[in-house]
Image 1 (cartoon, rainbow, N blue to C red):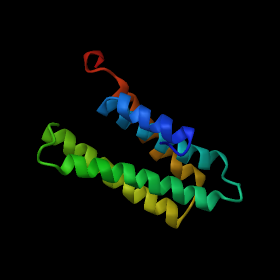
Image 2: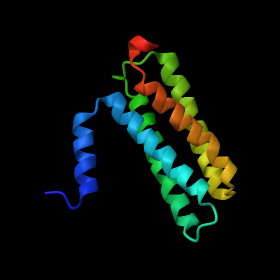
Image 3: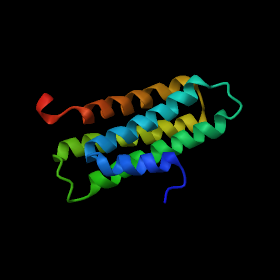
Image 4: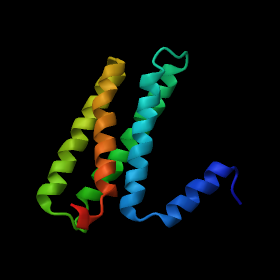
Length: 127
């Protein structure tokens, strides 16, 4: 069985969410992790929390890179290229934050993640 209630909730959420909803949820979580670090910049565990948030964001964007690079991906080529370029920007930006940490630098990735999550939550008929 599950080790704790969070694991149970996460597993149930994965099983009940569509692909778009799951992607939106993961992007929102990634943004919230960065936002929490940004809002608690002077915390004693900031460096560890920053590394954890950046690592999680990098995993999320690496997943998108792998999915978009797949020949079976049904998205139009220009959209895949745009998202891949955005993922490279996010990667480079996060490496810069690791090298030269400043709380303001997190805002762009937080905004990107939240904006894409919002777009994913928009039903295609609403666009």
